[in-house]
Image (cartoon, rainbow, N blue to C red; front, side, top):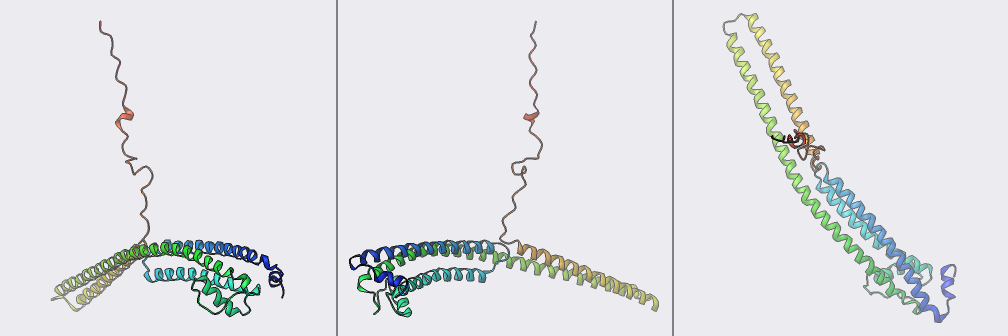
Length: 278
């Protein structure tokens, strides 16, 4: 025996119960502090992700991944607690095999109480202490999970509303592009009809000049259509990127009518003094 196992073997038989309670209590407090710190950082991680997803375009898949990762991290804290208990019991020499130690600690930690592995009779009191540590940490995880679920549901509702707005923006973009294309086609058709009417009875060279003018005007119509289409797409993309952004507050001094004409009371003059009448 070396290290902690030798120290535990040298404890007098009449003090093993006290030593087991003190040892288990210290380990319990340390693991609960570790678990609480982990829960705090997991909640901060989830909160930061929610704030990020509330801005810009809606991404429901990213919200689901964020929720799943938070749940997985909470589960990882409990797995780390079970492994920590098993490592400690193995190093103390209370359980020889590491697999048996993990199995025993998992049963005790979850208060399942099922299994054939047991501790030394002098240190069996550590088993219910492991169960108490599981009760503490599971209660903490439950409260944190309630917060995560409520925040996740609120985020999904928000993203659903923004998704509807995104669909409406894209529908309006499609209509605007269709209208621009219709106007461009009408302009081309009208120009073609005018050139055709002007070409009647004109000489060959005159017809060629009118055809060239028609081509140039059609080219200008199409360039104007492409510019308008690009402008519409850019505006729609900017509107989608602005989804979820908080409204910009009005500049200071304009919310309460500041900047308007000053009140007449501020320029009122004192009434003239009444002169004594003789």
